[in-house]
Length: 158
Image (cartoon, rainbow, N blue to C red):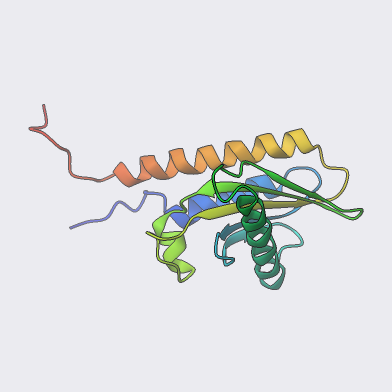
């Protein structure tokens, strides 16, 4: 069996999408974390591993608190934490790619992910929210497409 060396690896797709978001004006860090508080992937000028681990715990805590307000009946769409020194945007990002979850030591069948974006206080809240929604959509679309590349066709091939 041969492998297609041009196929994009899921972890590369995630890293590229996070890096693109980290390039937006006023963004200082981007984190994809699991809903149990672990870092899956991160990007940004102020986002080293230690900061990413701390932010993963923070966004998980905020997400859990918001989810618990109505006994888990509704879906958390977005959380904004505003301080005098930064803004933190949090959104549910669905299931991460299996390889990204495994690389972080997580069971891909049991982990959901949360996207966090840390900015300075000058950030355009609407633009950041829009970019986050687009990143989550693109991540799903690109990775779903990649999952079909090189697969066995169904039917008789006609």
